Image (cartoon, rainbow, N blue to C red; front, side):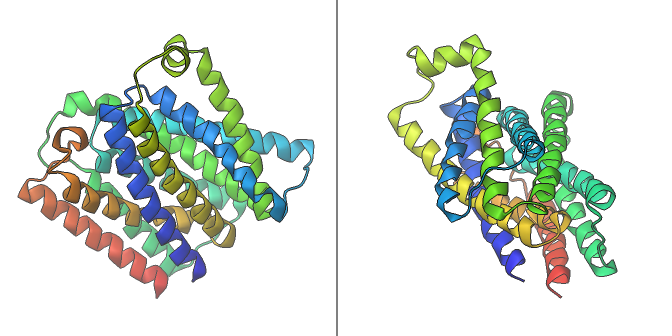
Length: 298
């Protein structure tokens, strides 16, 4: 069950990174394009794995890798924009639930993945728990949240495409090649964001979007995000992409717990609702997710 524990570690790092993203997007970095651009550029750090087996690949796999990396940047841009609009736990969960369902279907059709009865039951519980934790029981801001919801659903679609293509690559290339080449695609896609005048101005013309302190926090969050990426990609290379992705339910729980711990300091930025019924609902959702994880481990 190495893939299971590797997934846990990866999703914990990703939860911390997501909360940092939410705080920075709300306070110090209001332009999601800047965030997506910097993530794409920092993705080139994946080339540090080159000495462990990086090689030239055919034109076909180069194209697939570049498209895979581009899907990741598009998904990030949509996700960061949604994260800026609404609650961290809700946006992260909507994205995760959407991509989990799409990955389940696409993996069955295109990758030939077949889950056992117990694995399907675990998958359904993980997705159900993820959806349940995202429902707003207070009905707050239903009309105002539509933009965030649409963005989150769109991000989920592109993340699903990214993970399916990633698994396809890992099925045919080495882990190092499958990890490095899509990062090049992400970098190229990130460069297209520079066509936006506001993004260029904020990055290169003295924009005050980010101070030195914010850059350090951002880099810390991206280091955790990069570690998460390595762990999750390695888990995908070992096991079913459907199950690894469904384990994002653990990430939702981590995000909620971190939001609880940080609410007193970042109340306006995290925008998490902590009414008793909201907490009860999310605790029940975490229990459902826990049962799903237990079934996988059974």
